[in-house]
Length: 383
Image 1 (cartoon, helix red, strand yellow):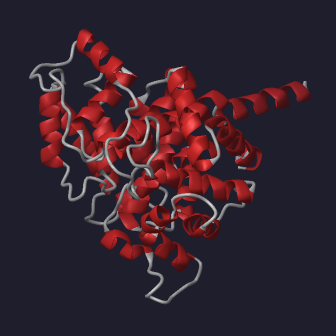
Image 2 (tube, helix red, strand yellow; image 1 turned 180 degrees about the vertical axis):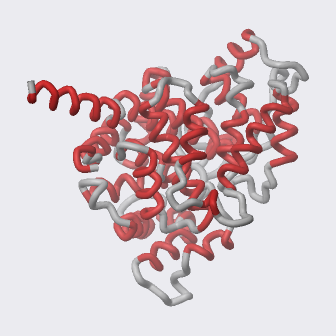
Image 3 (cartoon, rainbow, N blue to C red; image 1 turned 90 degrees about the vertical axis):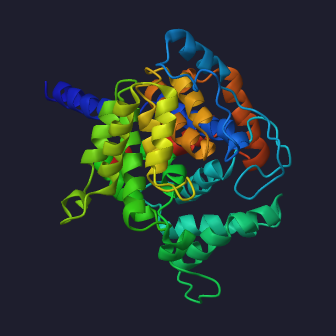
């Protein structure tokens, strides 16, 4: 009887605490596909269709048309350090949004366990990739990691201001989308949102203040999504709001920025009345964007889209593409959440195969390999 009780107890704990392999793969496929689909259109003039320009709510036919339009396109622009590393890159090519993740996962693989992963190992992974002359794209890697490399050197102890600077100086101190690009796969490594938040906070040496709070909270919400019922966006939002171990929400006179922007997302949805043209206009007028990759913009955009797309994943992703601006950063975040909710089968096999081919081509890895490395490093038993 004692053995039976222990078995039942362990099953209850582990069935709750372990995201499935399918959902971890879904998260990875979703974030890479979202990046690759948004990359060719990043900061280009928005390609809004007659459906998202209409002044009435989307109907089922609209949603089906939008869903069918979602695809990974080839690039029609030269190589760039923050985009594709090839001129006129083929469909499925990733951008810096995915490379950040892959560098952190390289550091995790070397560490062997999330318990052993440190910010210094992440810093070393960035610098090793930047300075590797044995592989392609050396000049692009140098330019891409000019800012991040300076902070990585600072994390490793360099204090010469001609070589290094602290995170407070990165991008002039602007809170950015960095953490909600880079750390998403680590959502699968912890048994609950609060442990996720605290670990992301400790590893995220590239950000400070509200930027770190946004990043840690967003990944905590993704940890919830991996273990929740599919499509529970309200549960994700509640998790992000309530996972606040450093009590940002209790700071006197200063509202927590994370919660304020979730409130703004709710307000934008409500006033848009599920009409896409009004939603886009309300987002444009209320996001306080300077460069469109501030910390609050991607989560505000993706949460604003949930009602309008009526839980149709690909219609939501295509609506996001048609909104425009930093389409790869928004897409990789929404894609990760959708994959965490629904698993890898949400994404058609031809999309998954293309992503794996491109990842092998550029970075020498693929989603099944990364998934196994994540599961090996998770160390749930000791979490």
